[in-house]
Amino acid sequence: MITNTMIASGFDSRKSRAFLKNYTMEEEKMISREQRRTLTELIMRSIEDDSEREYRLAALDDLTAKEATAEIFEFEMATW
Image (cartoon, rainbow, N blue to C red; front, side, top):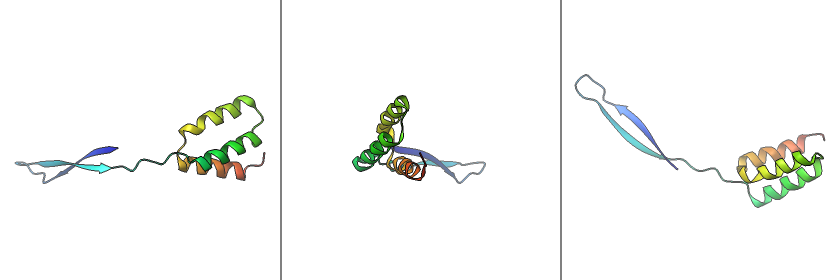
């Protein structure tokens, strides 16, 4: 993903300059196979409500690796 950012410099009454600088934003890594497996096991073991379980399993596809790590941590710290 490329983001264009306007950087302005040299402002005075007669002459103004501005230029665009491209910044490449590192895309976040998506959930890994290992994280998906771990979360699937935790969800199946910890959540009894079928609709909540299905909702959580369906949401795995949209998680980033960072979000998946946080979810795993929450499951491991929770007292179910």
